[in-house]
Length: 46
Image (cartoon, rainbow, N blue to C red; front, top):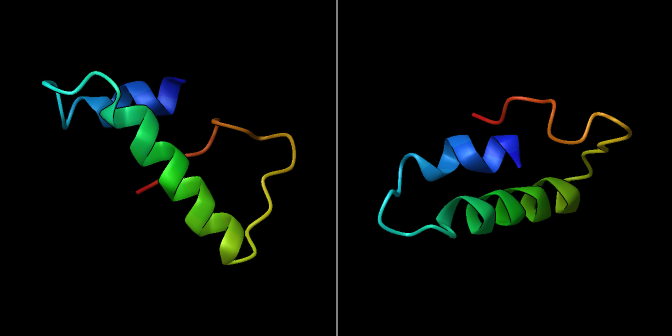
C-alpha cells in the first residue's frame, strides 16, 4: 500500500490509479519471471 500511495501522487484525481498501476506492474514483473519472496512492497519500482 505504501508504494501505491506514492504512485497515486501522479494521478491525484483518480483515487484508485495507484493501486491499479501497481497491480499492473506486479503482473508484468511476474510474467518476466521476477520473484518477490518476503520483500513485498519494500522495494522501489521505477
